[in-house]
Amino acid sequence: MTEFSRADIQDLQTAGTESQAHLWPKVELAARKREERDPYYPGEYRFERKMADRVPDCLILGEGVNRWIEFVAGSDQPYRAKTREALRLGAIIHWVFHEDHIEQIEDARAALGADLQQSVEFGRYSPRLDTLSLGDPITYRNIEMPVEALEDLVPAEILGYRKGAARIQQKDLYLDLGLFDLGGSQRRLFASDPDAHYYHSLAPGEPMDNLTRRFPSKDGLRELIDRGQLTRLGPVATR
Image 1: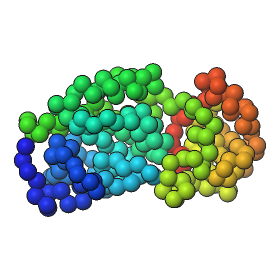
Image 2: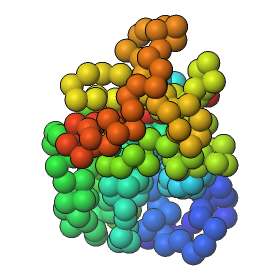
Image 3: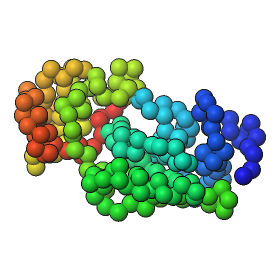
Image 4: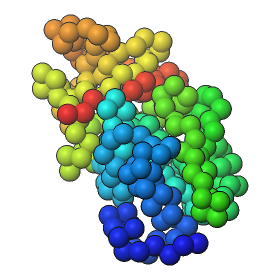
């Protein structure tokens, strides 16, 4: 594998030691952006920069959609946790695997389990063959996001909120947690404050004047969670 110059890897590396196998796709992705060669997406490329409290290998901030890209070169990955966090914070996520670690694709599928609703072609890369494919992104269209605990709906518990990184939008002083399916009914959920003492809801597209205050209750949300009937349909609204 080619050794990279300092110029090649400037702004691409983690703070610690990083393998050439893991560096290669980042160098290649940066080069393809400069040359506008596929796979290429317009937008601002941020390598190894925080999104909330996680650090994507590459985050592409683009018009209409943000892409979170993870390259897998042998190390274990929290596939489900990272996927759910990317989607909750407003990005779609690509998992891209080194040619020598293709077996980890099955680990990813097993970790995502029943959440994955459609077949997804994961990305692959080969420094030996000089090839890079980002594959299919995981989005709200091909995965379900069941809410598993009431803490998932508490702004202060959402990754990065206390440092301001989650940037949850306030509307009329309420924190917009995003769109959910509540037992078959689509509603936007709002928290009264960072600790979510109360919840409020609104039908999609309705003005804030129609906000239903103090509904649903915490007990009602817990019951839906216990019955597996509360599902996130979109990210938290961000500033």
